[in-house]
Length: 121
Image (cartoon, rainbow, N blue to C red; front, side, top):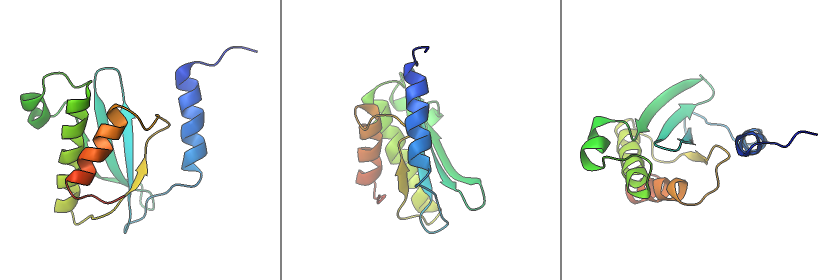
């Protein structure tokens, strides 16, 4: 049997978690994607299949404060930005979908930044 890559294992974890996790209009899903150089997050209503808000370390607001998007400081800024965008749309709480990534490092910093900015999950 062929050896599975780290990404294959992550995708298997993600599929397993997504069986029980879904976003509703009252409590949408906050989905995180982490690459080597950047991090992005979406707030998704799964009933309609639409993205309500989006933030990434590639946005001008983040790039002006933090040049490199693949570190914890940039992840925290992205968390604060997505929380402010969600609050502007009237969203108070979300279901956190870490996308199969471990809750450690940049994913944890993003979550902490969003919590500090007032988002509940």
